[in-house]
Amino acid sequence: MSTADISPNWAHICVDMQAMFGGDSPWSAPWMERVLPAVEALFDRAPHRTIFTRFLPPETPEQAHGAWQDYYRHWSNMTRSQQPPELLDLVPSLRSFVPPGRVFDKPIYSPWLSGNLHHILRAENVDTLVISGGETDVCVLSTVMGAIDLGYRVVLPVDALYGSADETHEAILSIYRSRFQFQLVITSVADLLDVWRNEAL
Image 1: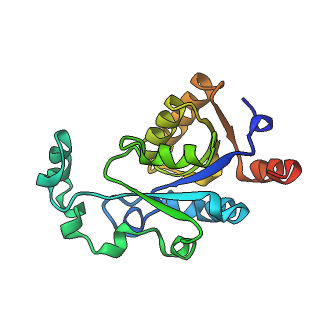
Image 2: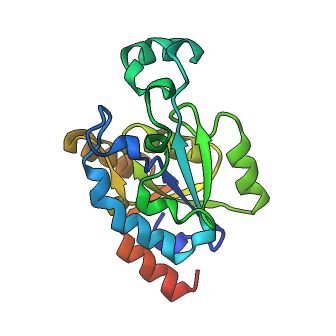
């Protein structure tokens, strides 16, 4: 698949650009600040087509399910009872984008398990997803794989993706390129904006 295959029925899913992944947080991903201008450029192209996902931990480890309880016992300082609410929100520069951008909250890496996001997108006849945000090898990976399973075509502008380690970021991009070439295209924000401009998408 190439950028020439991008459908006019696309939406932009921006994954977990939240304050708790910046600053001095234990979950800090330094790349997030670096990709903010690229994410903002995607939003500016079609604000009403953007859905921001937010990863929301449970109030306490005991409110999580199964192995997530072990995860949050380790990261108990990142549960909602231990974090100020503003850290769960989008980074400040993106908060003003809602509305017209929309927010979709999820308690796990994937936004697809409840079926609600898929229902919203299908009701809007969306068949192609531009995915930005992070982290490349965790929540973006879950978003991409679920989207592919559900039949969406996926577009990944690499300069609008962030990870927390170069090695795993590059490794997962290599896997995307080598294993999903019929369902996924990797591009840049500039090239994607050129396609939209030339095709009036």
